[in-house]
Amino acid sequence: MTHRVDKSKCFYCGGCVSLCPVMALVLVETNVVCDESKCTKCGICVKGCPARAIKVE
Image (cartoon, rainbow, N blue to C red):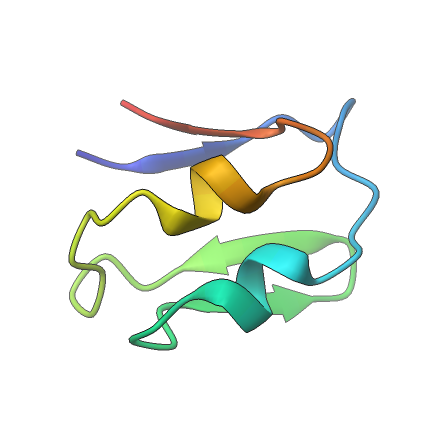
């Protein structure tokens, strides 16, 4: 599984980054980057994204 961030929806608020319990998400300029090796696939970032921009595929 990988995380996909829809750039047309994301407004880079950093909410998903602050919600991630294992710090797998990082906000880099205008990109949310997921370190898949740290990610536990808990889905908190998907549920917590106010723009509904994150999908796990």
